[in-house]
Amino acid sequence: MAYFGFATHNLLVPEGMSNVMEQMTSQLETPGTKPAPVVGLEPPAASSNSRTVTLTNETDVPDGLESPVPSSPGGVPMPFWKEWGLWLAIVSSIACPFLDEGIIATAVSSITSDFGSLGDAGWYGSGYLMTMSAFQLIFGRLYSVFPTRPIFLGSLFLFEGGSLICALSPNSHVFIFGRSVAGIGAAGLYSGAMALFALLLPKHRLPIYVAAMGVLYGVAAQTGPLLGGVITSSIGWRWCFWINLPVAIPGLVINLFFLKQPPRPRPAVAGKEGETSGKPADSVWARLAALDYLGMVLLIPGICCLLVAVDNGGTEGWADKTTIGCFVGAGLLIPSFALSQWWKGEAALLPPRIVTDRLVFSCCVFTSCVESCFMVMVYYMPMWFQTVQGVSAAESGIRYLAHSVSYCVVELACAGIVFKTGYVQPCMLLGSILIPVGGGLLSMLKVWSGPEHWATFQIIVGMGIGAATDQPGVVVQRLLGETDAPLGYATVLFCQNLGPTMALIIANSIFLGRLKTGIIDLFGDELDPEKVLSSGATEIRGMVAPEHVPKLLEIYNQSLTRVFMIVIAAAIVSMFAIIGLGTKRIPDDEMIAGRDPEEKGGQRDLNEKGREHPSGEERSGL
Image 1 (tube, one colour):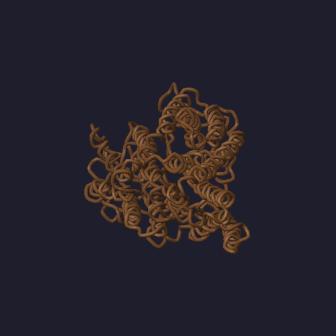
Image 2 (image 1 turned 120 degrees about the vertical axis):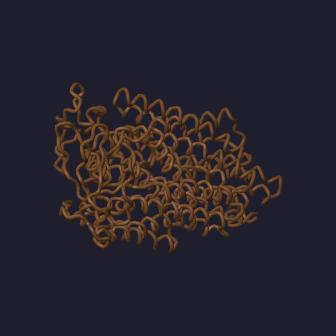
Image 3 (image 1 turned 90 degrees about the horizontal axis):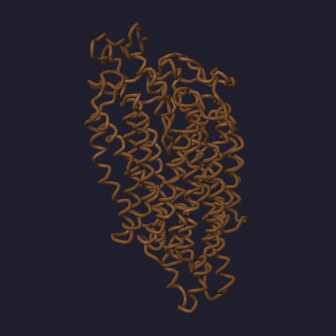
């Protein structure tokens, strides 16, 4: 299996890793059976109390991989403390990306004030998410054809390098570049963590370790705004990025000097139509040739052109030459990317048969909408607290806890409901109902609104997002076959990051456009809107005479609360995506494992009532 019954954000076993795990565990010796040989591996010798996997010789180790450790994950049972030590070594390297998604939220207002770059605020989140979404697909391919550990360590260096650029950035443009570099590294770390889990930890206990990683992510993502607020208020926003460097050192040292990766079979190169030649890709050049470079070249510039067009159109006008040019570029590049994926077939970044599958498509639309709501809340709710109500970054983080706590509580409750009942649709529908209700109430906030308003409204939205956010991952993990699950989840993960990227740019465009119009309408020539846009979010009270501050705050409030209309629209669209999931129950763990509940170890078809799949396997469908 590539995925297990605990769905979290960004927890992906890259394509190809499920096959690696199956080949490794197939080497376990069982009574009365003879294990099948694997390329480069020797059948395990019989032993009364241990099972091992050994290499035939040193030349059988793929380039860049170390010899196996004495306790290989598919061999001698590992001591409990060592398993958790390996888990800690891997997770310690991705703790910073976990925090990074939320820690910047309460620092945005201070960053815009330092750089005088209120107009760039949307790019501080979108730049990170854009590269993370695009490179998630690329890293999925890289992990399937190259050794895991070097790519994982390279991703860690990329993320830390991006954080260093952000900490030292002299202006907004350099800061956005640093965020983009960090996003690339984060994409590789998320995929690499699950790849290392599959290679280093016992398969039968992987659900425990994946669940523990999911809990860590949830805690980090929800406490990030509070931590960011405290750091920004006490020692400055740059320390939100400086802190990533020392925190990553233990994980880097452990991974670099102590963590030994076992060998794995060399992957076969996929053909244009999805079949493999059966010949391992021995050379580095053969593995490099298997990557979809055309898709990479078309996808990233296409997304950038679309984002710039939307952002520029909201501030400079839709008839602006830059806006039109970027729309034309996106209109050429994105369809070209789609055609390239159809031409490449199974070797594409987004295989067409996966993208066009009803189940995957519905999950992609739903997760894109729900995550868009989540990121709009993360970035714009703290900004409302700091600019409109004039509280500190730390205080805004505390006030945001109303959303965070309700999110976590309902997320855990719905996980239990889905585990017991097997139905994800009720939780998804509940989320799609609560989110627009809460978003509508947030759009009605006033400058003088108290905690009985902003806390209650945040709780409603938090409950909705918590109920819905994990369910697409559960569906793809449980309903797709083992061959399709990695590709399906990679596609869902891509949309999970791409949706918020677009949402933040649209939100920024709405905010700046309404702010500019409101200033012109109320102040006329008394206040230059460009002066406001080139200032920081926390400096507005000093830009006008004291008697005009209430008017300016009212304009700011109207501009920020209008952004929450995106939450309403996205949640309504998510309701229609639920229709594509149908009403069937998700199979339980015994069905997923392919074992008869009454006869342990008896293999059977996962879905006797399933429908034929293009890959030739049967699968259950919703």
